[in-house]
Length: 322
Image (tube, rainbow, N blue to C red; front, side, top):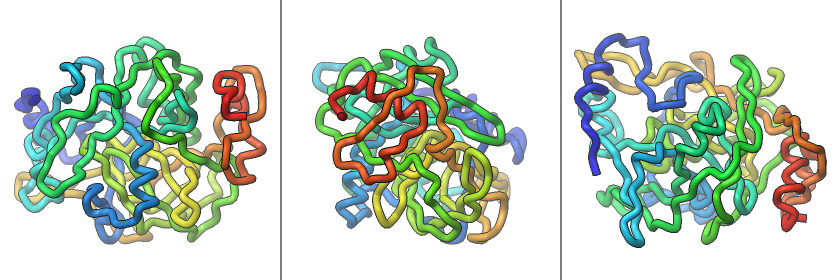
């Protein structure tokens, strides 16, 4: 299904420094550092990465998802038209639909960015979609199985600090089947130079896996800075340790996405050590007003044992993880 693109296409040409993004993804844009490392799922040969991608979601507005029998039709629009892109731009022919990204961290809990889910009412209006991805060359997704679409039961907690932590935890309307909760690290063990991978929906596109990134600065309070290839729409994406496959943080802010070239737009490309870098919320910075309890995620690394308050209280809402 396609939504009209005229308004968005017109807006795309208004000003080079005004990013065009979907819905709640307003906390800042992202960019390409060095080589463009974004891959569609059919291009990914690492089985471990494919398994991690299988437990990530795209956040859609509820009105953009229509259940028809055993299929969920997704309302999308032309990426090229919506963003006023030049024809040489990667993924020019694809469609965009997700406004943010997220990851499954417990059987019925999604972790994302706080600016993606600002209120409980916003949460109720969203759908969390697994499998919005290009799994075969040239086969663009227009639908997913209906059982891969979930609603919001509760906004468990959130925080949005402009130059600090930015996170949200959402309880889904039912436990997820067919996708496994991801492991995560809530201790500050990352150091400069550590290798990272991000999985999510840049510019709302089907799932992209982007490696080849490293930590540039692990010292800021509440977040790290990395040279991840990310865009608006990647907000809420899980950022993984490339060696362990464990979530280390949440992608939340970054450099401007696009620049103008001969009347159309192309990705903003920076040197690997150039531009401002991309901000990733540290999981250790996640706080919550909820009752504290410890979370011992089944099979998780030892670094999970001492969880931040928000993760600690997950034991009270997901006791089967004990």
